[in-house]
Length: 188
Image: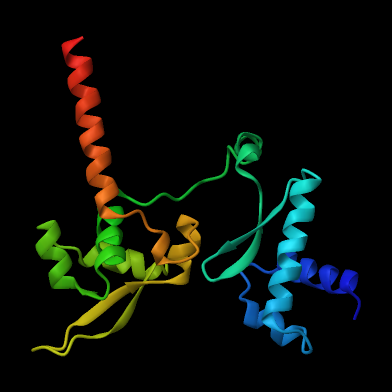
């Protein structure tokens, strides 16, 4: 298969896939190519889109590759989909999800002790939305379930991996900066 044909096949695979495609999945389709060659073609294809300023980009997300629109086109897409119902996560769901993301694997009791509220409903909703999963059981009395995040979590938040989560230290710095700005505004 020629280089152009490989590009076309990979482009078609990305276009039709509803989820990010892992290199291994693409390799399964293109029997004779190594993952390093596939990654090179993906990078070339991504550069082609960028150089010609197209409305599509190829991004690496959630352990795979996917077609997406560039951020600067968001205002146009918002106009197109303004009547569409967007399902957002509630504040309690976001709090619970952040605890799971940063402390995983974590038990329900550990989450509840941090939040000081019952989280049964929130955990149920996050499981139903497939943003979290039961990652196993803790080897302690009662053998409670432990929870972790899923690939869908990475997709939802646009992350390649959990390593891309903002560091806790960055939050503390941002809060300190915000307090300084607020103090300055109050004295002005």
